[in-house]
Each structure stands twice: as structure tokens, then as C-alpha cells.
Image (cartoon, rainbow, N blue to C red; front, side):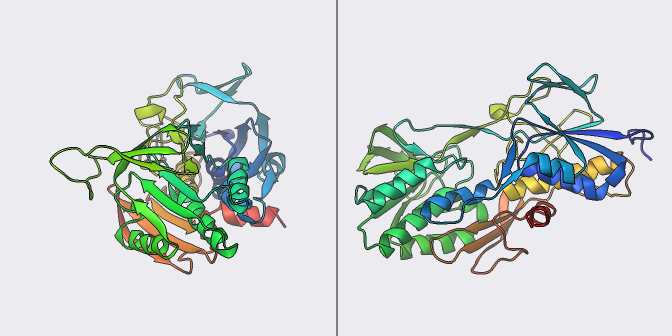
Length: 391
């Protein structure tokens, strides 16, 4: 038993957050450590909802499922506190709450998510939290008010897959309704969904071509006014723009421009911070240089922001905490594997890749999932747990 292993009394674990990473952490600890840990779920939310499927709702998909957090806490034998995490005193192992309250912890897991900020004032920003903007877009396409649609992935990449889904589902809907719709997809990536690697990227490029979606990569965009787009080469990306002299920005026009937000970290007081306020973590998802504090999900400094990655980080943190609490667990490091379902307006496709040294390996785009069950988010504990409580 290591000097830092818990030796007596209930091991108090505070999990701050109410999303994928938080629920995965709680359900993993419940299975790994059982009665050895006392769980507290700290969140200002009353519901957990399956956000990845909200992108599908405006296109006629089933509503994203919602689960009361009170019920989740009860089934996991956790205390639920409806409050917002404020800051941490790591010397006294105290989590401070927005209300002024305090919680002692033996281990603290920060699943705080990231803050979404609008990059382009004159574009519709798809945040994934609700579908109002997309519903309005779909209504305008159906009504013939949008004949030229532009979708823009900004330079500071977050998770571009939802925008590809909007492009593909918009094209499929327009074709089904015999509506004329020209779609241009503009991205700072060197290739479509390049995070998944060359093989998957080629498959996505083929899909876009089959749907007659124009693709322009390796660029920077500005949107000075509604429907007006200025594009120029992104020198960081290289690509087809290479010339000895910078070209004048190319000007495009569209009836509607849709973009993704840029993401920023939570800037946690009491902890070290990485670029743009994200939380730096090691391979076991411990906050670097801080004892007994962990982080998982979009709040961390790992570049890929995706529910499956959040769940994998949560698993790594839960295993480390379970071992500290005295459970017979050998903690495994975080080994990122991206597994994503690509909604197309017809049958979905499935993308997968391992991330090694910041680069994709074993890239695949398949018509059948390479993981089970074939859910939008691949998670070791969460998917089975939600299926169980949803019966």
C-alpha cells in the first residue's frame, strides 16, 4: 500500500459536473470501489441529457434522452448537491461552492466542461446544447429561403464532426424534398475530419462529393457581414494555397452561414492552467502537480473534445481513485481512442482511430460500428448504465 493510499474511514469523492465525464466517473467508481467510497455529485443542473443526438432533432430525429440527476445520484448511492463549483483550496482539500458552501474531499474530480464562445458575429453558431438555431435553418431550407448554405469550421478547432453532420443531413433533406441547395464546407483543417486520420478522411471526402458538397480546406475565414465570407490561406495548414505571394482574400456569398463556437477552459482558481484556461492533466488524468485532484472531459487540455474521450479520461481517473480508496484495481493510463458516429441523413457511418503522439493511427470509416453497442458515444460504463436506468 502506497503512502498516499487511503487507510481508514469513508473515502470522500466529490465529482463536480453533470455531463458525460461526471456520470461515467460516478458509475465507474460505483462498480470499481463500491462501499469503499462516498460519492458526492456537485452540479447546478437538474438533468443529464444525451447532447450528441440534439444535432439530429431538427432533421426529424427522435428527441435526445434526458435523465433526472436526482435519480442518477440515488441509483449510484451518491449525494446530489445542486450548486456550482467555484474554486479549490488544495492545501486543505476543500472544494468551494458558488453559494459559499464548502466540501471536503479525499479526491476531487473536475468535469466542468468548456465555455463556448461565438467566433463569428454574423453566422449562426451551433453549440449543441439546444436545437433552436438548427430548427430555424431547417425551416428556412424547407421554405426555399436558403439556396446557398456555407458551413465554417474556425481555426481554433474544437470538435468539428457535428458541422459535417449538418452539411450531410441538409443535403439529404434538400434532395428528398427536391429543393435546390448549394452547400460549401469551409474548414481550417488540411483534410475533412483529419483528426481521424487519412483513411477515414478520404471516406468523408468521398461522402461530401457524393452529396455535391463543395469542400475547401486549409483556410482562414472572416465574416464581415451577414452572408459575406472572406477566405484566405491558413499558412499553418499548408495545403493547396501555397504561393510565393499571399493572394487577395477570396470573397464568397451565401444565404446562410453556419459555424461552430470556439472553446475555452474554466480557468479554475487554485489550480495550474494551460492555454486558454484548460486544466493540464497527466496520463492518469490527475491535475499536473496537484495531489488528489483529477479532471476529465472538455475542461482538460487534451485537444480532442468528444464525449467518448471524456468517458475514457473519466475511467482513468476513476481507476486511480479506486486504488487510492483501497480497491484491488491496477490503474491504467489514458489511451485515447476516438470512436464517432457520423449522422448523414441516411444510414450513419462510424469513424475510429487511436491517437498516438497527437496523430491518428488505425483510421477507419465503416458502415458498421467497430464497437458495441453502436452508440453515439462509446463509453465503458455510461452506455450500459443509461440503458439500465432508462428501462
